Image 1 (tube, rainbow, N blue to C red):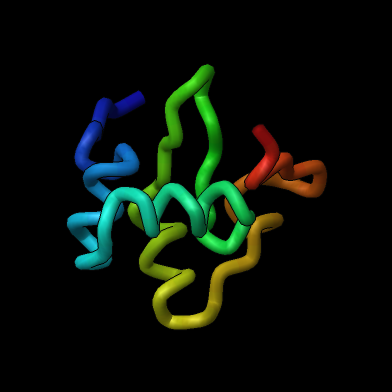
Image 2: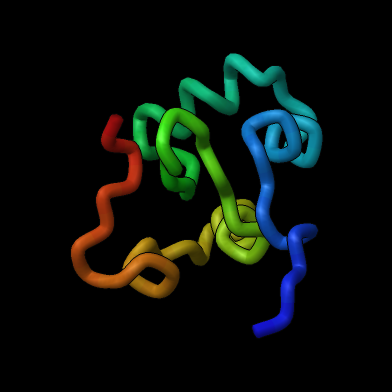
Length: 73
């Protein structure tokens, strides 16, 4: 498996990418409006999911499977 850490965003990375504040990114993620996943206490976002979300074509089942827990704390 190829390691490509540039494909995984932190909350700071996704905020910078979207040109919004970190608190706005956190609130969107917490409400389940921004496709991401909590890993322990930290949010992580896949670049492809964010790009799909931006163009309006994101489907959480495509990236996370049928039993997604996106937005759950």
